[in-house]
Amino acid sequence: MRREEIYNKIKDILGSEYKENEYENYTKYHLNEKMTYIDCMFLEQNYKNVIESEKSKLDYEKIEQVVMFVSFALREDNLKPDEKKNDSEEKKILKSKVRENVLEKDIGIFPNLKKIILLYSKETEHLYKKIKENPKYTKYLIIGETTDKLSVNALSLKIKNILDEQKGNSKNAIIDMTTGMKVTAISFYKVALETGIVAYTWTELQLNTYNTVSDDNYEETDIYDRVPLSKIDVIIEPYKENSKIYDYIDRAIKSYNFSDVANYYEQLGNEPLKLFYDGLSQVFSFDIFAGIEPDDFYNSLRKFLSENSKKLKKFSQEKDNIGDFVEQLIKILYLFGEIDIDSEEMKKVFKLFKIEDVYLYDFKEYKNDGGEFSMEELKKRVFIFFRIKYFCGKFHSEKERDFYYYKICKEIKEEFEIDIKEKYDENKSLKELLGKFYDDLIVDMKGLDPVKSLLIKEKKAFYYENSILNIIKYNLQINTDKEKSLKLSNARGDTIIKKLLHQEEKSIEGKRLVELLIENYDEAEKVKEIGEKLKVPLKRLRDKIKEYNSNIKRVAMERGISIEEDVVCYERIDLNKSSIYPYKVYINPKIFDI
Image (tube, rainbow, N blue to C red):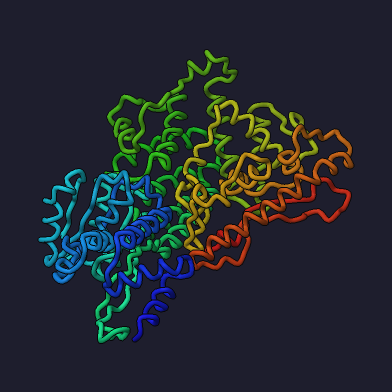
């Protein structure tokens, strides 16, 4: 094989982003030819630049723990005897750098890494001990566990227990699957699926090495060597499955189907949350809310907290997910004198759900603040609040809803002598009337809506966070701080796109869109005047959305990813030419489809 053929082969592997002299540097490196100091410095700097770009695929600044398997690839010495003898110092340094093992790579990209969890076999135990004793790793807490004689289920449970003990979760831990045996790889996959922790691998570009036969004549060998580039591949399948299950969980929570939620967590292997939602399904149940006795509800709440403190030995979820909800329940029971927070039982509840520094508001303070209701009336109103929420979430057909809305309206009239139709607007539907009564209760109860805090705060199929745009469907992560064409300003059109990316609003349309586009918008102005004011900002918004979609596709294509659909959509929803509110912008629902 001639040198030119090898050069072209390397060029094909690297892609079209380099200059001719840079392809030449890679060819010299691979054929082990003499290299200048500048040649070596270019390859080393480019290696670092690529890794710097690749790490943006991960939430690297938040990672404090990494889990990996100790294989022979973690050996320290990566230079061959002939390289030690013949290479220049610059080339030795370059080769040591580009052949660094995965542990060194991980340490290099996670600036806040504190703990390294290493699994090892009988054959690699000596390597684990070397790592643990190595002075350059002393700043990290190194935790080891053997994989010998462990099945997939036993090993995945062992990993989850270690993570739980070390307070590792989907926000601060990550799994490096680059090295490992079949059992380990499957166990890592299982843990990623069940916990939502991201798993990834380092991918090295490798080429056959060549022996020189004569001038410009090379013979290909069966031995491979790395091209000095490293890529990160996020293992997307468990992430997809995990996202789907969490979407199902969210839907079930919104519908108050807590038995279904328990079943989903059983699928994920999360026994504490399975038990938690099993218990909650007994509190938020049709039997409780079809009745009219508030005490049944409050007694079941007390029983739920008491039984959880006995059943659950540990609880690894983030406080955000469950602790806030339990905290709200405690506040309700405390307000009505239903619990003693100094009891041993309640101390266990506080500890179990990681609840600290709770401001508890008792009935006496409620009255001192000007509260107008007696304790019994307030208890009934809060019970009605939960009934309205339950029936709104539980039933989806208008016929079912209207039956219970009418029933609740009748009870409110009998109990509180409030005619809801008379109080608000008799022309409104029962759903709207109860919504208004519900809103008034929210104000009275200082924003009480505990079920909202149960909704999953896991990353979904599409999200924009810390300037990272994530499209899971395409395994695409873009750092918009670095991709200047995707960096959004505070201009009106940019602000609208930001609201959609952050999912602050599902869609922005009609009057709401006009309000955001026009400064000092006045609804009283004539249609023609508003239409004139809209022309320029609407065109700017359309152009910005078109440009933004085009830049996302361009960045994806540069990474070998083809995106067919637009991410941000703009469309006319009202074909009436005289309408001043005909447009709608939104995130394409196909982007969420994984």
